[in-house]
Image 1: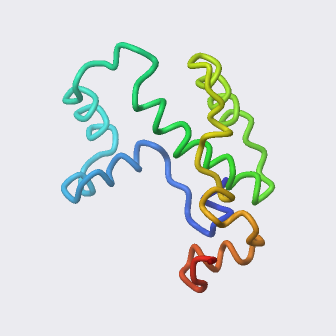
Image 2 (image 1 turned 180 degrees about the horizontal axis):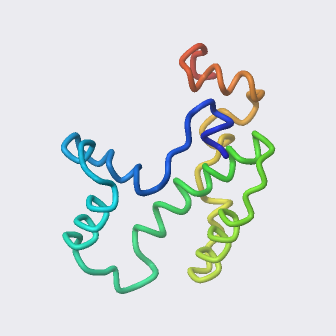
Length: 124
């Protein structure tokens, strides 16, 4: 929904896996995903790992912030952020990357779209 609001064509997760490198673009998405799954190192063995402590505040919180800006209801995304924060006793909404924290919070929807498409400089 956020990709659509930004004027991008949404793609299924398995197809997004193809963008890891140029060679994968020519292959079946399911095969690439399965090969990646098998070749990945084991772990992590604790919930307190970078896949949570980096990806949630820097990725999911920004995604949630974009959803707010575009009026998109994102209950699953927000629940994941809350669940991870609850398990680690951290407020990822507070410490995470948002449009406001990167200086884009005051932009209107149209101004944000202009910025995304390089029609507008970064606000000072």
